[in-house]
Length: 111
Length: 112
Image (cartoon, each protein chain N blue to C red):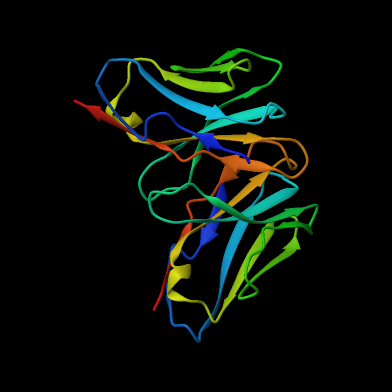
């Protein structure tokens, strides 16, 4: 079967600290990974993506790391701010018509 | 314009009603999607349209009927829904399938 799991369903961090959100996947054929942020009452918002030919990709205050050996994806948020409080989903394509969302991690930033 | 719009924002309907959800994008995207999201759960894919043709139907009950009138519009027609169909319905679009999907704000549906 297929699974896209997150190691921690909830995460609380102090404002200014770095946050790390993890995601595990089971199928090695996965080739494109996306992180989404969903604030309460809103649709998911694209944050950053990475293809399987890369190990790391950086955006503004965010970094995505892909470890294909252990089938693990992580999202790092630098200097976390109250506006980062949301649910974060990983998602991935596995070729053809298959697209999966992870179960989500709820990030709470403590002022 | 990088926005996906959805109307209405909220909808309350009885089990015998017929209603429609609408989605629009003007990014020139050729793939459009409907998702259902229950509280504290990830979005679940319902339908995918690619180049205005239905390419994926994830075994969705026939009381949900999608329609893609043109490349910018996507509708979801609702008929004889059940209370368990109450959820947030999200529309998304992408340049083509297997590209990054951009989501609208959703329609929050309550079936009484």
